[in-house]
Length: 449
Image 1 (cartoon, one colour):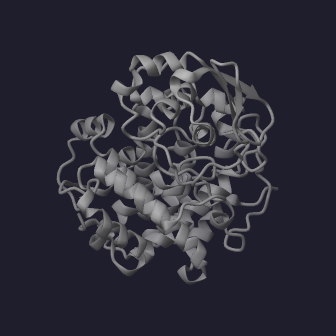
Image 2 (cartoon, helix red, strand yellow; image 1 turned 120 degrees about the vertical axis):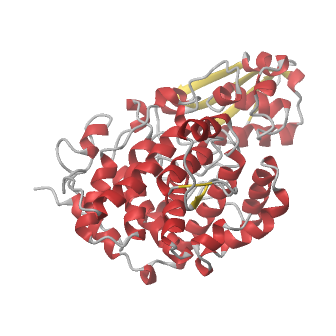
Image 3 (spheres, one colour; image 1 turned 90 degrees about the horizontal axis):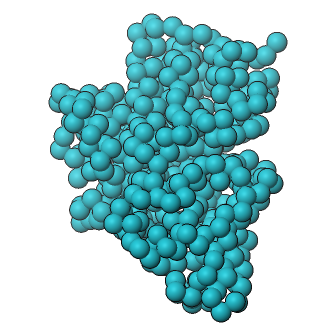
């Protein structure tokens, strides 16, 4: 008989002692908070979050919306803020999804409502991260390949765990909360490159807040919602090859220390990042210009190829899921940044022309640490002179957990994000608060604008 996985995760979350969490894990969580708040502020005026605010028209509440003067109730704030945090696709990745873009908005909303401390928020983040990792790492295949967006699948459960921890629910009610989160899991890869993708993160954050509140009030759910033959793990598995039998070792082996967070250097799908690093390094070494290029060849996995579905994008949103655009931008602008992920830049004739000369080669060997990725990505360029240039084999993108950004690099990105939102002068003070979040309360944090 399979172990009662749902109940064991519930017991771990309910009993998580902040004093047992290693400082290295807390440091990763603080970085996740800081990075997510930066990209949330940068994305708050994107069309998707703007439409969401317009349609919801939430009445005033006790939770801040995207660090502005506007306020709403916690469930609506979590929905809007998480959608904003994922709108630019500039948020971190890890454990086969985008953990912070769901966890941070859900935690911020519920913590501000409850008057929780920053230390409580960090503990809740780790409870959510460990839950996400414990489930996602049991899948031997690829959720993306089956059409599921893992952020919407695991995020709803993880946010429920985080909010249950904030509300200090007991083990039984926490198990109900995460099972309720499981029943709200959703998100389709077919919607990548549209406003629906960040909406997946928003719905997951909202689901987590709602699930914990319902469970606290006595709303029940199945105690084996994960491990049952018709539970979450089996239902979303690519080939039914999911480990529903392994005994969890939560609290003795910290997933957050083993997997970490991958902080994005570029506001575009993470599947492009290794190749962008490779072509920028090749351009730095060889100094070629766009007019010198005859063809660009990029070697990636077939699973990355499925995700990068837009081969001739016409908008900034579409370009976020286009390797052809990533290569063209890197060559023409020598960067892939917020200023390039605009409709105007994407439609430039020189960008469109260079995208036509990008060839994608797909492989079927995978990185054992990331089953969607190839062991490495590599770019080759043929110049008009006939010379062929071979870029480095890139195993880990800059900002990956195994090639982390420094605090200075993290602040530089944070400053860029706040500058994009027109609030750069506030960057230093807010960043300092986020990096010392455990010394302040949620309300002190969100009042800093």
